[in-house]
Image 1: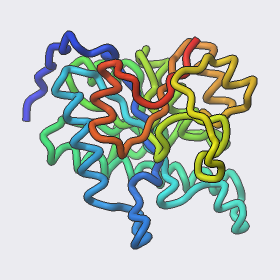
Image 2 (image 1 turned 60 degrees about the horizontal axis):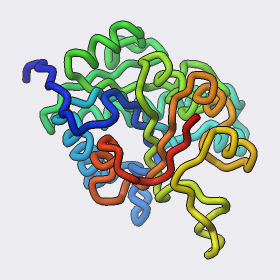
Image 3 (image 1 turned 135 degrees about the vertical axis):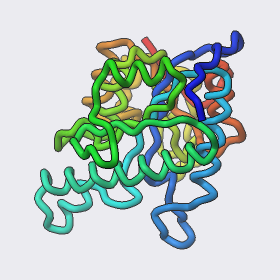
Image 4 (image 1 turned 45 degrees about the horizontal axis):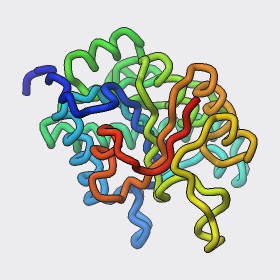
Length: 247
């Protein structure tokens, strides 16, 4: 498998993206297993589709399907220790994504914010950009390398560092609502929002640190349902998918 950068398809609106995935999307809800191979392959098929269009792709994956720092705190684990455990969980998920992408003939690199040279490269900004330019998918693991920061913050930070056109936050909900659509049948979905409106209404877009980074660096955020048909490829073409938060 050779590194051959593809020319960007002229129909593509977003040429360099950060795709943020929660760890929970990998879980098999029926069996409780942290990984569902069919879900993993479906995600990687969608990533391959946009990769073939020449889109430069960064992936940030959470670890909630294995361990979440806040869960550990409720079980008596020190918050800092719990957060490091959560960071290691993101590395496991990153390796699972890498394995699935490589099997789909998509050249991939995992970069970790915590040094672990036998299984991942250290995060180096210019090296990551060079990987993207060579047509490789880059998966950012281990969060920011610091406790008390979420993978949402990681996505916002890496998007700013990589000069990404957009953060695409894939969830199990088809956008942002004025209240929880699972609890309220009259919940209203937004097609677009400004950062200020999202802040004013205290909508659950990202945690406050991540959202502040996006606001300060003018990085738009698209929140959409990963399970919708060809959701990612439709999003990179600029179709109306989910909710767009912008300046």
